Structures are given as structure tokens and as C-alpha cells.
Image 1: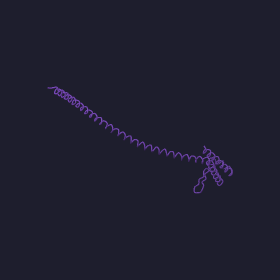
Image 2: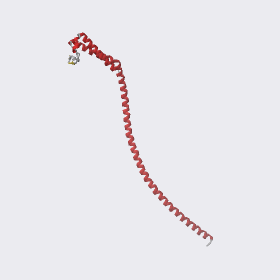
Image 3: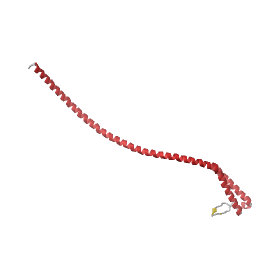
Image 4: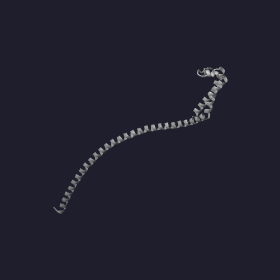
Length: 181
């Protein structure tokens, strides 16, 4: 054996050892890749389950937001209606205050005076005291007062009419005072 053959033998031995080491490393690498693949597969299954639960949660949140949006729209409509109603009430209240302050007292006084005049005229026509007048088909019903009947009969027709008018005027003023409060 000469030196060239010995060098080829040594090189072949080192080449064989290198190939064995490479096969061993590749076998270990294959096992590592298999373990990594199974681990990635299990993580992928867990991730799929997590994604499904996340989708379900997002869909529930979307449904709740839709319901909340519908409720918010309803509340906005109610608020708009209440605002409009408040404006209408304010307008009506201003008109009512105007009527009560400007027309209320004079109208009540006029009504009381009209009632007093009507009662005084009925007393003058009948000559006896009147408790209540009712308009039934254009005729007035006259009823005597039981407690004041004797005292009123002693008065003259004119004094009785004046007394009835004064009573009605006082009653009208009392009503007008109550209306102003």
C-alpha cells in the first residue's frame, strides 16, 4: 500500500464517519420537525376553537349593539317628542297665563254680574227669594230659600234685588281672586 492508497482509505473512513454523523443529525432533525408539526397542529386546533368562540362573542356583541341602537333610537325619539311637547306646553302656558291675567278677572266679574242681574230680575218678577235659576227650554225655575225666606219677604223688591246683586258681585270678586292665585 502506498501512501496514496493509505490517504484514500483514511479519507474514505472520514467520509463514512461524516455520512453517519449526517444521517444521525438528519434523523434527529426529522423527529424535531415531527414534534413541531404535531405541536403546531394542536395549537392550530386550539386557535380554531378560540376563533370560533371569538366570532360567537363578536356576533353576540353585534346583536346587543343592534338592540342598544334600537333602544337609543327610541330614546332619541322620546326625547324629541318630549322636547316638542315641552315647547307646546310652554306656548300653551304662556297663552293661558295671558288669558288668565288679561281676560280671567274681567270675564269672571262679567259672569258674576250677569248672574246677579239675572237673579235680581227673577226676584223682581216673582217677588220672592230665589235659590237657583235653571234655563230649561227657555223657562226659569224659581225656588224659594227656606232659611232666609221670612227675612227676605220683609224687604222691598228693590232692596232684595240690590242685595242679590251685591251678593253676586262679592262672589264674583272672590272667584276672580282665587283665579289670580
